[in-house]
Amino acid sequence: MNEIRKFIDNISPMNDSDWEFFSLKLQKVELEKNTTILEIGKTENYLSFISKGIIRLYIPREESDLTFGFLFDNEFVTAYESFLTQSPSEYQIETLTETILWKISNKDLQEVYERTSNGNIIGRKMAENMFLIKSKRELSLLNKTAEERYLDLFSDRPKLLQQIPLKYIASYIGITPQALSRIRKRIN
Image (cartoon, rainbow, N blue to C red; front, side, top):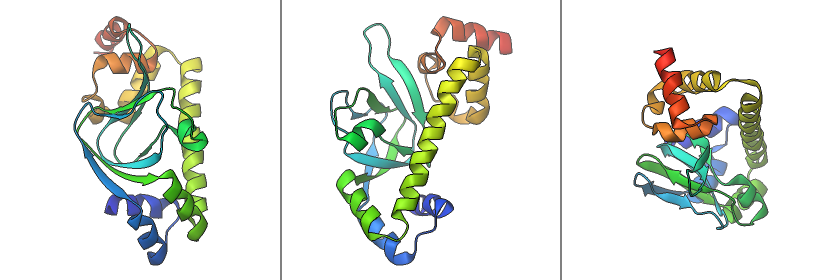
């Protein structure tokens, strides 16, 4: 739980009483590799902090899944649209490695926003950060080549990328596994 406190304090430090109130709302969950966290069509009720692990966001398809997000240690994960609107999710979330999460329910998070001095600031900054990540990905898909997207992903997370199956990486950067194989050959 120390890592979530450190992460939050880097955004906007919480005083000890606010932290105690917030931390009592957190629930620790340990998940095995390839565990579905949220199924398509289910409503997201939790915002989770990844203490350890790699998580994939994707749309299941018969021919091959469409992966559009990876999340790692010290990041938050949720089906944000579903979480905000309390409507069914249009995508799934699964673990790619053994994962430890600290979860807070939507109801409890709203209470943290109302009863702590800087809960709203932290929430706003996290929402802004999620928007920036999404915007960066969209612009990357529009402005960069597949090779540039791969190199960006590889330079951002070289060690962790080794744990993600290549078919998911290919899907994430918008190409086939065969095209990714050619890019990797060219780079090496």
